[in-house]
Image 1 (cartoon, rainbow, N blue to C red):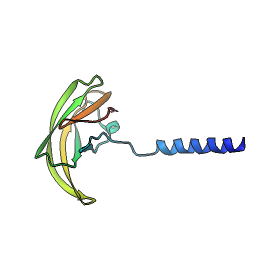
Image 2: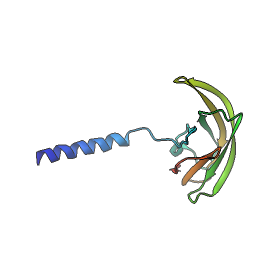
Image 3: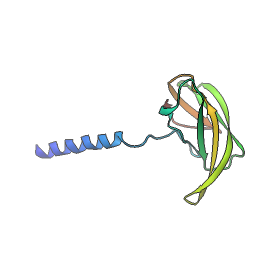
Image 4: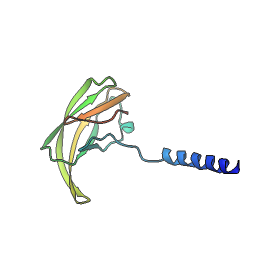
Length: 119
């Protein structure tokens, strides 16, 4: 019985630790959203950043998908530099983006889809 109580306490501590982990930002095989979707301001333009592990040229296309998978908006991100991280070149892209309301979304970045997320 005492072992079960100790195990239960360890499980509770594990769940508390998981709640404190940094959020997982939406990403695809080659692209990663740098902004936390939960911190995006609704109905106000926000600078959004994406990192890419492949050179996609000076621009990448982003489509915001709604909960049903339909295109809610389309945007062009402009390459604004790059950096070397852990021996790999990372390409940086940015755009000002406005989410009209909170909801479940997915991103289609140059044809690669992120898992759904909430903003």
